[in-house]
Length: 220
Image (tube, rainbow, N blue to C red):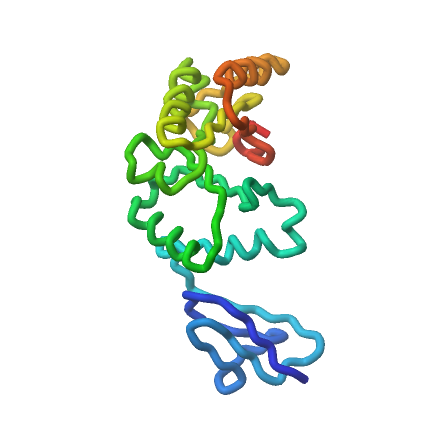
């Protein structure tokens, strides 16, 4: 018999079940940063139902700590001794949110090597990142605008002293999950080869591959 303590932030506890029995206070104690469960057996099944607010989650500290745990550090990519994080469509959040989130990390002496997806030329965004890329290779390739779009990213990156990452893809076909996007056929590998030739012609610092597990979009 022992006490179990779980740590978390900004969670609203709705229900707690131990071996299919709903627990009530004082069997447990919850505050802003932890959940303590008392008289826990040596072996048990725990079910926790929380309410979360992902739209308000702008903290990156948990992700940073996870990437640096011994179990994962060996397989993480580090640049300048910082864990590399690709941030998708960074303009979904305002520059103020990025400033606050990364400022909180820096105050704890924690720093990502952040590669931003399409931050744009506005100084309010590139200042927070160390690199620029575009995850979506399909749209510019299908429209025939690949070189123009990625050259624009390269120019913004160099203007702000950032790393430029080009992108390649073997093809794209998401017709099994949604309507509206004509497939980008693989053509027996020719699409992938052409993608690499275009990316290399830009003389990028890095090249990212879209993707390794987007099975539903046919780009794996």
